Structure formats: structure tokens, C-alpha cells
Length: 192
Image (cartoon, rainbow, N blue to C red):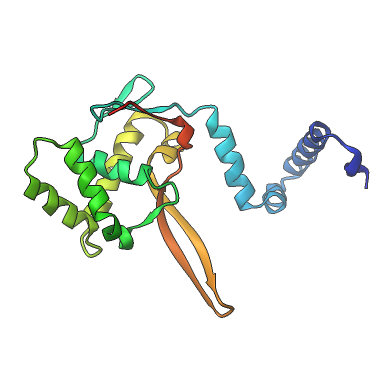
């Protein structure tokens, strides 16, 4: 095979040439099939890395992307910090397993808020039958969308990630994780 002797740069040039030929032939479907959806997602992340700005979290829990402040209420900040601390993702139905962590975050951020109010709010957030967590994530999403384009915002928001799990040979199920896909090297936190 002639491609075995090519350098990575030469392979990239050849890939580009073949891709342009397929595009000119109106066959971008074949480009997608050849690359695969997971590769497309990896390429999307690679392309976005150059455009993404760091998320700076100050010692008094103010959030900034570049020079712009991400204005969130304390409860939204607590939810955001919880998901930021779990890059592997959390299923909403298992949020109650993180009740203490979420309560501690909310307490630190909302120092003047009544302890009972914090406990009550967290109880709503971790209740799988309550819609409170969806409402908070929606508000977080809207704030980021007000600061940047949808493509960039998709890395900062709490979004869905479905992971296929196979147990044994006959049972398959899916974890519906919620994650923040922002590369963690772009998260800067001040000392608290």
C-alpha cells in the first residue's frame, strides 16, 4: 500500500484532497461514513479548542468567560460547580447521591441564605420527580447562550451524553449522563 510510506503530514494532505473530491462529487455522506460520528465529534472539539476562552471562577464564586461575567444565582452556581467537579458526568436520576456535595457547595456560595432554605432547595434539585434540576440547567444554558454563539456555548453548558453499557451478552442499557464538556485545563479557579 502506497499510504504506508507517507508521513502524517502527507497523509493529511491526501485526506484533504480525497475529501475535496468527494465534496465536489456531492458525496459528503461518504466522508461522514469514512470518518465516523465519533471522529467528527473529536474534530469538533479540536476545532473549538482554539476558540474557547477560559472559565475563571473567583474566590468569591464569580464566573467569567474572558472579560464577561456569567451572571448566575447562587443555586445555579452550585449546580454548575457540582457538574464541573464531575467530568465523568452525573445522571439526573442519581443526583441524590451527590446531595451532601451539592448542599456544601450551595452553603459556601450563599452564605447569607437560611440553612433550612438551602436544604429545601437541594431536596427539590435531587428529587427525580421534581423538574427543578432541569429548570436550573436551562437557566445556565440561557446565560451562556447570551454571552456566546451556540457552538461555543455547547462546551460550557450542562449537556446530555449517552453512554452505552453492555452487561453480559443479552442486556444493553444506556446511561444518560449530564456533563460539562469544557476541557478542564480551561477552568481557572482562585484560591478560596
